[in-house]
Amino acid sequence: MDFCEVGREMRRRALLAIAGLAFTIASCSKSPANEIDREVTTLGTAEVTAQLVEIPGPFPPNDLYNYAYIFKYKVLKTHRGSVPEGDIFVAQYNPLKARPEAQDDVSGKVGGHVKSFRAGDIHRMALESPVDHFWMGGIVDKYFDKTGTRYWAVWTNPGAN
Image (cartoon, rainbow, N blue to C red):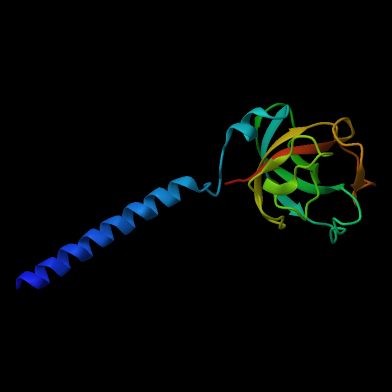
């Protein structure tokens, strides 16, 4: 190897090292897929990991009014508080908005890291109950004929099984 080839090889290795370091730093600043943050572990009176069972219809557009939409979840694990096993009903505020952008001047404290809602997804949530103690606006509840507490989702993060 001549002197020029040695120099090129050293520059290539230095660039690879810098790229690796930049990737590591960038990945540290992103939220992990199953983030457990301070909000989900301290807000609300209950905390669960649950699977979104179904979305019973399309969401109304957000330009008409602010609303909470009731989802059916299957509780996989209760981390704190008292939540019954099995299916529960959870109100998510303005579900067309990603959780980091959901909070506004009428919602009170709501948020999380979930970007959108899809049936089958697992969520780790901080909850309050009953919903009408925390939200007095419009509620879309397609489970109106089902009994059970309606929970208010204060914080919703992606979860893991």
